[in-house]
Length: 414
Picture 1 (spheres, rainbow, N blue to C red):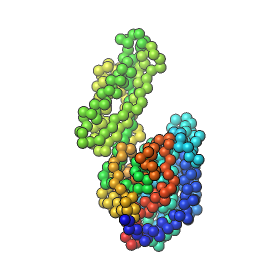
Picture 2: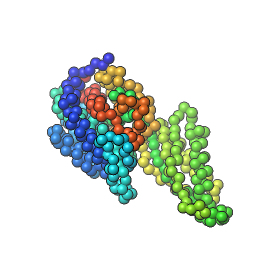
Picture 3: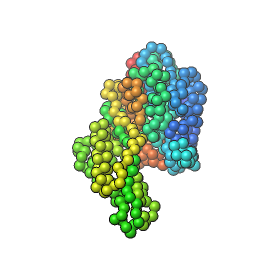
Picture 4: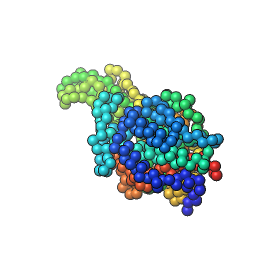
């Protein structure tokens, strides 16, 4: 059974009266997705919503990052992050508010691409705006400072670093705790799940350029075939997890792309592989990368490659490992408010750039998951073209979770 704090109940007492407006706002964001670090219209709408509910201290951080500060007397500083960007893919949810046909020119490539909120960041924006509105309307029930951080560019691991580079640490008060959440299809609908320690894996993408020597397909002895070289590398890379990582550890090495050649009777002079790695331990991640480079270099030497291979690391995500003390406090608050809907969350081999900002501040953090589908066992995963969480009760539950998680620090009657 839950035991709900009266102050929390008063702060959240207006959810029913704002539900229709928050649903309409969510549908607006869902219909108008924007790519990482190109969330210009999204940022402008967030600023409009903050102004409409009377928030005076709103700061642009970088091009599309936003922080809203609610200063309410003495007390701790609690920061809460909501990410704002969408994915370069088409939506196929069939919802009447789907972003079907939405496109945007990617600044990085100059190419037009479909765009969709198929990860749930549009919900995260509305969760956080709802919490800001509720806290602002009930200042008598809490004290301290609440900082809402609307972070761009999570999907390509660029947004948190961009806000740090833009000076977020000097622009905002240092948080006593930094909070985050993500709507998921892997938890029962309406539940909140949290755990101490590693929650999301560290990740990196690696582009490897292999150099061969071009030749006619009928005269392979005159060339160095980068396709055969690449095939040997792909096969040998599978031994890293199978034979070099301890069975008690978790690791992933995936070759997601292999490009080479233009015609059946031409041996090309290069090949490009794209890899992705995942690990829940920094030392394991370091070993994966060292082993990949060792194997690739050795295979290139064995194949008589005329030039050393080239490695480019990108889309690098740190390990998200929840600090014990704030996680215990949030879990106790969740248990008291949500009762049986407060659950344990298993580690997820997806990745987040969430921890970059609290690490820059030097403050503890905790992050939790929120179940977004009633039929969660058949729910699509994040980044599926069919991913569109149930609007209700998810919108309310996301805002409730933020207020409840902040309550151990901000409530007057803790």
